[in-house]
Amino acid sequence: MIDKRQFYINGQWVAPATANDLDVIDPATEEVCAVISLGDQADTDAAVAAARAAFEGWADTPLEQRVALIKKLGEIYNARRNDMAEAIRMEMGAPIDLARSSQWGSGSWHLSGFLEALESFDFESQMGTDRIRKEPIGVCGLITPWNWPMNQVVLKAIPALAVGCTMVLKPSEIAPLSSLVFAEMVDEAGFPPGVFNLVNGDGVGVGSQLSSHPDVDMISFTGSTRAGIAITKAAADTLKRVSLELGGKGANVIFADADEKAVKRGVIHCMNNTGQSCNAPTRMFVEKSRYDEALEQARAAAEATQVGPTTESGRHIGPVVSELQFNKIQGLIETGIKEGATLLAGGLGRPEGVNKGYFVRPTVFADVTPDMTIYREEIFGPVLSIIPFETEEQAVEMANDTVYGLTNYVQTQDDNKRLRMARKVRSGMVETNGVGRVNGSPFGGYKQSGNGREGGEWGLEEFCETKSISGVPMG
Image (cartoon, rainbow, N blue to C red; front, side, top):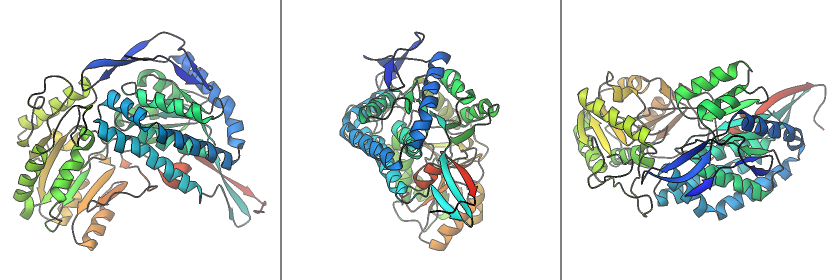
């Protein structure tokens, strides 16, 4: 068992102010894999004070020096790929190959994207006789989730570091190990004390303390819509900026002329990371003339999705992250059955032959209707709902019939139709015909999916204030 009962504050590993230990559970075995401590107000205050004391010096540090440290951090991150992958495998149940590739790789990918964006990012520009400056917003509280831990830590910490902010990171208490490894990397890279701080804690404790802290200038949060609302309310009294990346209920619209692999591709995407992605295409809308064929293809793709141990190599999916998530998903599958959806694949209980770990059967429902719970609620597990549609207008209406607006997907060979759909659906991102997003493209949503953008120049701007100075031309 790993002992991680320390926080990283002001460039040092320190013991918590009060002993408040929490077990970290390996979701594949249901056994304790590590123990951490949860911080209290004294720990939060110490970390914020360190960040506040370091802010002026870090903000005044020349950009090239900040970039050099970030590049060094990137080299360390790449060198410790296996350490990071093993931490992610244990804490949140990603199979080791996925942990070494997509989970670890998302951090490396975003870091390189920010370095590229910095090459053309204008911290100062001219507007008539005014000089326009982008300046670091200050001390930032970074609150990150368990499902893509390094994806989110890097999307927040690297742009904040780059523009001159200082920060306190509170990773998910369910999956804190990868962030502790990241803090080790920051320390090895040689960032000045107080620039980056880490305090473990839960949302009610350290999360709320950061959100309401008068010396925190900004909160960047990724997680549930429920928690995002609570954070926004807690931050209101101090009028700090709040950037939110929240839930989703993505629609994958498959027209009759979509390529032959569109359905299979949609199922695989939905099941990836065991369905634990906010941008997963969990509602598949299929044009009626292709509906019956799509059901058979979806059934076959789900039944071909293997579930297996996180320690073994392969393309299988692992467990969901916790007993709480497992029980929630089982309850929603049961509700789908009771409300009359047709169960095509999967269903209740663990996969055959599995009697331990939070493993869920890859599940596909057909004939889902808008009044059903599984149509509306974000399940956050390997569960897909399939619904027929008849016209393009109906597909748009169905796609927008949700409180969320993160990512929608469109599959058709008609370029004009793809563009019409992309313009009409209310979401921050639209992916078409299986083409992924480019590095640095803005990530974020409409409606209850959040209000900020991460990645590239947009991610850098998120941590900046804008100042206008009149009468001082650029020299």
